Image (cartoon, rainbow, N blue to C red):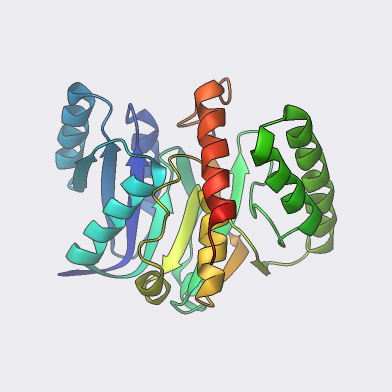
Length: 267
């Protein structure tokens, strides 16, 4: 079993252009690492292209049925556990570019944590954390939204959530390291010790979206803390899996279904 510091699991769907940019951004990482490219099967042609790319880059490749974000990542994580002795597993979207990773910063937390970097989108907006705290009123409004899917209730949730997030952003703007409730799911660094108790990490009844909410509560139930460390920096193209025009009606339905699973779960 090969020993590495980091094991990256990158789930892709319908193309590898973003992944190539992600892979090249790994050039500045000095520590030994492994990359597992997981193709959430979109076509035979795409899968063959992914396998060819993986051979060229000398990385692992898995093609899996398209059963959702969580299912694909769970398979990648299981493969990592079976084939590598790693300190940290990193779940990354393919449209991520790593700007600054520092092993000394990461290892200082130990291996029973989940760490998120400062994630900036193409407009420079910071996407982490998803929630500083579990905001009581916004979460209650969100629970009402899933009962009928009203866009008016969704708008109220988004507005209320934005106010809470702005308050905590101002409160913690000078902090480099912050313990938070939920991290953005596009790039998460998970210690091996934490992963061992959290597997399977994702609830596979959630096809798409709300995975971060589940991970937050799942980790909390095992006393695994989540931290945002602004000294670690990545950029996120965004819409890498949902398209440039945002969510369509099918994706909105996936979101509702996933949220319903989340609120029914007991952690």
